Image (cartoon, rainbow, N blue to C red; front, top):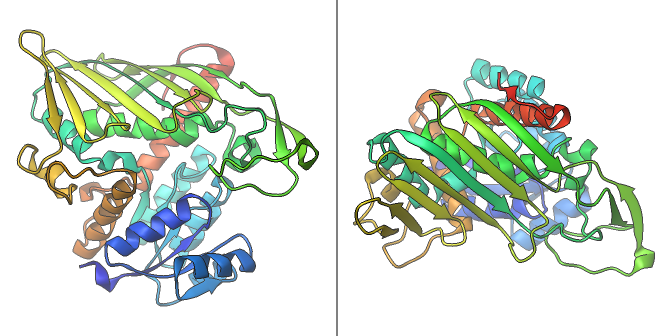
Length: 383
């Protein structure tokens, strides 16, 4: 099914090659790649063993062989690139957040609808198989009424003031950072699994390092590269390093999220606990092939990912049998499988199983409300 597609990836940093590898595992032809300069495009082409290095985004869009483009570029470019790709007649799979502002995401949703093209956002953590199983169990009523959802997403890669990446700058990544970079993953995951809709938020955020020391050259994300003091320069930072958000969901459920990129020892840990009238469900990305099912009047259960033990939805997104773990890279493959299967079958966005531009728009609306709540220190309704 997937061999019919030819695509290209814009972005050569941490996540761009992840897209390339996941697409290839599906049997999709990845023709080429685009870096921030022609030299970076060519270097990435060689490293990844691709056919073509694009000199510009315009050159990529002009390639008539491409049916779709993947955008793994800095946030500030998402709106222009996504809009350009749709206008060029290409399906688009964009990294999160979809754009810097809700007015931009609203326009992208309308444009995607008017073109009839597939337009998705890479909220990959939906596609750990046991998260799909959690969704099925909630839809089937196993938990009963949902009372509360709590969780966190924590990392430590920005713990020190000498840790630097373009994401810390508001003009490159947006006014929110930890919330928009990883918090939106949690919010998308929770609303996807539970079907709950956020009604209002109350946020309290913190910038741990108002001044960071930026390399005078460049450093790759998550590289751990250490530079001498003379190679650094001070740069002011206004984006959030960590923070908490309270949620009120329509229907009465309550929620709480803690997000941090300055929690030592946690490289990439997303977790949730969903409490219902009958059961609870708990999951962590550190042990993604385990789902804890909590009971009041009998022993708790620990469900391991296994085709024989999960429902059809989870089994569809699990490529390996029980005892064979599936992880981070597999979630991208499964996300892209949902995206390209929808295109191949001609499914409209409302029937597709991938995160759409509308999902991306909702996350940016949430981010706008969270930022407003933090600044005004009050509950803010989500519109």
